[in-house]
Amino acid sequence: MHDQVTELAQRGKALLPEDRSRLVDILLESLHEPAIAEVEAAWEVEIERRLAEYDRGQAKSIDADEVFAKARSIAR
Image 1 (tube, helix red, strand yellow):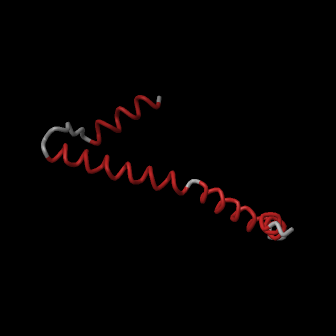
Image 2 (cartoon, one colour):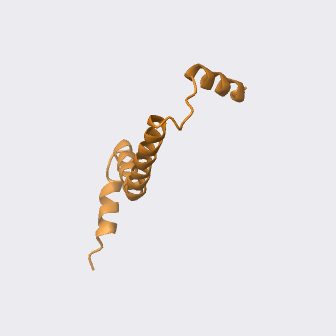
């Protein structure tokens, strides 16, 4: 019986170490593609919501200097 996965694994083992590493990265990334697409879609909705809220004057904006100062104080 022909096992495509075993055959691919054997062929993968013949690759140079850096190519095997790259292949592993590509395969692992492919497992998460649907989740990534869902997250990106959710962020698009959230961005639109936040922009609309800002445009209506319902969102408080904070000066970048203030944000960075607070971040620095938290990081200490």
